[in-house]
Structures are given as structure tokens and as C-alpha cells.
Image 1: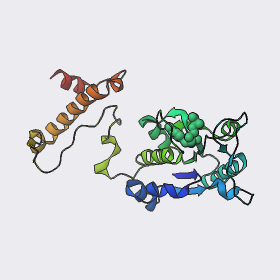
Image 2 (image 1 turned 30 degrees about the horizontal axis):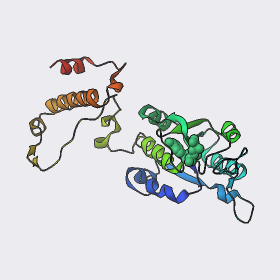
Image 3 (image 1 turned 90 degrees about the horizontal axis):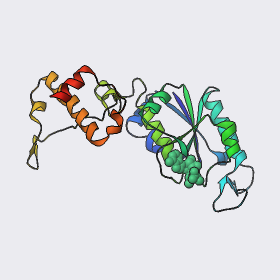
Image 4 (image 1 turned 60 degrees about the vertical axis):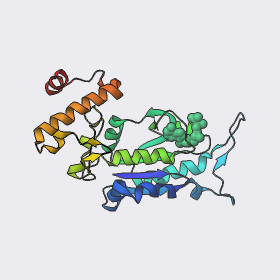
Length: 239
Ligand code: SAM
């Protein structure tokens, strides 16, 4: 997958391109990244990237021309079919299903806003979709774009090893993940659940599934609404 980033602060993305699971995916060539910075498309001596909003009011907007040219450069890097996403608190909220769907795209262009945002006409002309990472306002779209990169990359084939399969994570099967334990066997007087020491893989699998069901019921009952339980899940719930 190619991800083309449109941002005034490309260096911020080192957090995902140089570290951890996403950094490894970049190093292995499973994800390629390109940057286009609106500042590189300015023509005045101050390299101005913001402009005043019509109608007045506090704050500035991103200047149209440099941003439009940066998006055009991103399209060249990512290909004409790339999906253009503007990170915005007004967008549809990112969730597991959306991350999986985006991981099936060949290329994404992620546009990070700054200041009070972007001229509405530019969004209408250039953007396929607006995505929010939650109901709060960030100072810029870079952190939101990094959240998209990280959550999408985890679903690309070959990025997670078998033992770290995204299938085991929360939301993959509509449930939260089960609790996990590591050494020592007793911590602050609390022992590891006995079944996890049994060596019986089938008992462990069923225990984990039951825990995941219980946890989801307690913490996120909304996830269970409209979700069809398997016969085994019904059996475990009845135990
Ligand atoms: N005036 C805008 C509004 O209230 O909708 C907020 C602008 S915000 C200060 C600057 C930039 O941060 C936005 O253009 C957007 O790219 C990004 N941003 C802020 N909150 C976000 C969120 N929850 N999800 C995704 N991007 C966000």
C-alpha cells in the first residue's frame, strides 16, 4: 500500500514511519510513504501557508493554492485511484470496520489540516471522505493521520506475525479482547488464572472466549447489540 501524506509537519510522522510495527512495515516495503508539504508550493518570500477567513472571526485557514498543489503532488506519488481522506473532527468516526476497509485500498492520500481548517470548496473538489478519530478537536490532522496509518497497517498481509494476528485483537470478532497475564505466576497476592497454566489449549481457548464475552457485556454492551452469537458463545454464556 502507498500512503501519501499532505502535511505542514512531515517530520511528525517519524513516530510511525521509524518505530514499532508500522516502522517495520515501512522498512519491509509493505507500506511506502511519500510526503508533500504545502509550504513547498508557496511562491511568496515568507512561504505563507495560511490565509484569513471570509466573514472574519478568530483564526486562519490553510491557504488554498499551496494545499491544492500539495494534494496534486500526492496524487502523482500515490496514483490516480488513491482515496483522498481529509482528517477532520467533522468526519465519520474511525472504527475497526473502517480501518479494515481502508487496508484494502491500493493507496491513500491523508490530508492533515492546521489552523481552523480548510476552505470548504477545496474539500468538495479534492476529498473523497472526511474521517475523525473522535469527538474532540486536535490542533492538527497529523496525529489523526498517524492513528489511521497505524490502525490500517496492522491489517495489511505480512505486517503482524502469526502470533500477533489482528484477528485476536479487540473488535476483530465484534468482542473486546480477553485479559492477558505474564510472569510472575503471583503478583501482589493475585495468582494467574489456573486454566492458563493447564497446558490444555482447548480449555484455554474456551476460557478466553468466555472472558471476552463477559468483558464486552460489562464494558461495551453496545457492541453486542445486533451481533449474532455463535452456538458456542451461547453455550458459554449459559454456563
Ligand atoms: N475548526 C475546525 C472544526 O471545529 O471543525 C477544527 C480545526 S482543528 C483546530 C485543525 C485540524 O486538526 C483540522 O483541520 C483537522 O485536520 C485536524 N483535526 C482536529 N480534530 C480532529 C479529529 N478529531 N479527527 C481528525 N482530525 C482532526
